[in-house]
Image (cartoon, rainbow, N blue to C red; front, top):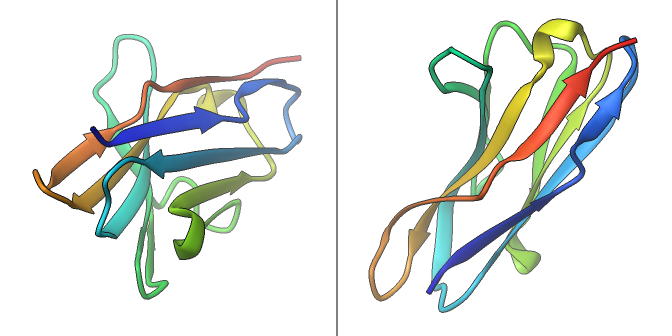
Length: 118
């Protein structure tokens, strides 16, 4: 079974920084795309950033210039460096991966809470 384990969430003041990590484990042949999504209370889950195995990235307009997504293909791990955090960034952040395995598909992590508050 493929599992995604996230870490790095927490509480930070406006203007601060956090780095989220997500490691995929299990019987994995490859991971084509990894990404981060977030969901605030009462709102729909939205894309934050995506990164392909080749390093191409996509960002939501709301985080461009503040967030950076990266990945370590050897470790099947994706990161989200979040700088200049704003209260509007408060949400549960979910890791996602398109995994090539015996049962290929779209896998999700459990989510990690990020709270921006003074």
